[in-house]
Image (cartoon, rainbow, N blue to C red; front, side, top):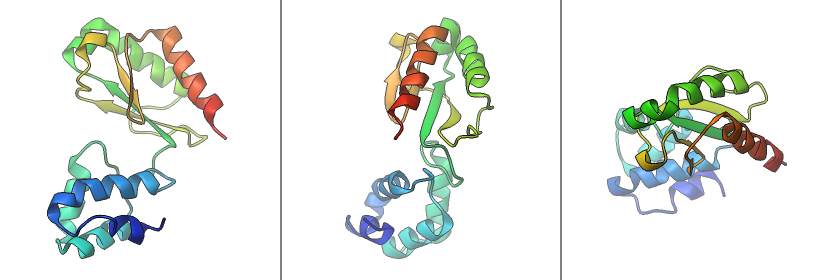
Length: 153
């Protein structure tokens, strides 16, 4: 499905902006919203480009720069922090070899920090492509990332 088809799959109302942006970003192999896509969304919804760009840069689930195939979001909320989140963040940076906001050399993982994932009961937690993983420790963390690597074609 082309970007135009994705955009036009929903009614041209401002209420559909977030849904359209999610669908367009999910279809982009580099997992982001580029300028031509944002302009096309703005034109279709008859909204100013600056408004659509502002929405895309406001929400942490969207990106206007290329990202890895898998986006790893680590919870930095106080409960996660108290339950070992700092250690998990350090281990992730070391294991993936990137800092937060960066993408691994193989283009597979982008590491991002999230203020809260809403999963305090299973802290510390992370989310990969919308799937939540909790009760993390170094061993479980590596198992999860290794499984994601093996799942790649």
